[in-house]
Length: 277
Image (cartoon, rainbow, N blue to C red):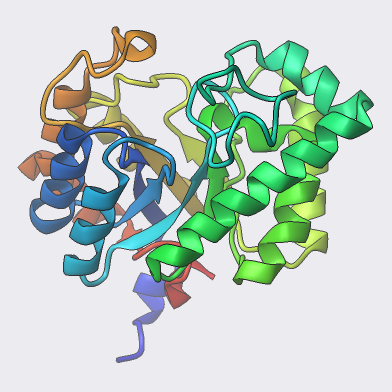
């Protein structure tokens, strides 16, 4: 059915859960958010402990748009430590010193070679799930780094990549603007779909009902993405000790949020939804 002229001019919205596969509590929240709430997309961590459960759930949820949540910081690698010793520790864990690693990605050729191999391995792991690839983003928005983005774009084409999250939230710090502008230019030049803005950075881990209502009721024209970290309980990892995962799940299920979405915008089924183009 063709959309009415009024519907076509409404702000468009993608609601995404990141860290899909991190924990069974996250996977359960994604399923509830999709079946009972406004969640329409999820970003899969292919090296996370509960990834098999996440994939099984995703295959039962027809219509859930699943993308790759690339992990290059504070997480587990796809390749063995012996294959990427410049990137991970002996357990295959990435560190969380992103400034240091960012310099190494840019200036050290042997580090870039290992980085490319790891990014390809994570794309390959996603392809092995046989889920359609809706989008790609990176844990802690590391795809904002020019080297990481270059590798995502070049490697991703081999796996059908068509959409990448642009991590630009209104009111972002001035120091980010040149990097965001460069990323936007490169995504457009590569023919990638992307959002016009994102919401979730400023209130990361705290996108509760009121935060969602504040965004949804004032959405500008264009395509916005709201991302959250829902789970059925809190305290999933030490690095997210302050996250209110359960409040974020409650927000996705909130009748007030559902009414606001229906009233103010057009909810899209991921980046692959024709309405999101």
